[in-house]
Length: 378
Image (cartoon, rainbow, N blue to C red; front, side, top):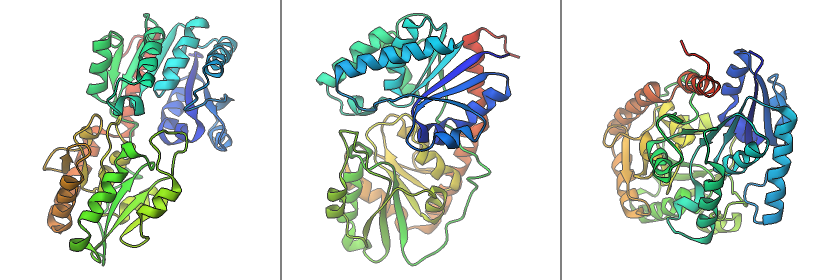
């Protein structure tokens, strides 16, 4: 085939955790694959898989307009240098800037993976940032060269209403997929204290404050019986971040603990009893996909992306965004009933098998590449 494919991801670790199997399958099918990403120390690990890497200094939350504009033209020069047949952008900001650069470089095929619409959309306000993003989207996403991958139907419908996404140029692929053999079902062990886990970056719009408030509300009932564990790093580039100092004040190291970033998330899920993500908006959270695969009951919000991981009353519960009292009630309901937790966990596993396998996700990406290139599919 020997068609040049660029996969453009803002940071190297995100590529490894969310897109590596797709790149390897594309290479196996004969694409000449290059990864364009910022180097945070994981680039050599990408190269160890036999992939070519072109480093680029992406700014995840830059506010300097001149610098951002310069970055678009630098990206356009890089695209001209490689002359790809297809570019696959990952995340909203990369898709906006990359699509403008692709137009300048006259790239024939562009795929934009909208893996969540981020802080500007989850805030629900028509603020300046939101208006700027909407304006740039109009510039970036017009034209027939653009195709889209969405992780949930809500984001697709939003783009469709805005005049960007259509049935012909879009595909819904539920998340980044999960290796169901690596993340096999594990019956939770009985232990002295239940583990209630929130996996994710320490951001307000991940529902971290609601998680802490729910824990405090249930302290008199549950102290000594469970641990509420926050597992994830702070994200200083995100306007919704909660600082390390704030986390130290909000947790006590006993009943409510912040464990920080953990390499072994599979073991975290295996040791957990209930997985909670009270997020305001997601694409489709990998954390909940992994929790489902391991076989854990879920408590999340009735929010875009999150609701894709829960069948209400079967493998978990959905609560209104921002409602820590209802969150506490649903966690307590599961916490007080081991048989219910086991029943819900088995149904979580079944959902993962039906909806989230990595094989299905990779296959659908290959279909999208072939569609953009006009290759006849079997």
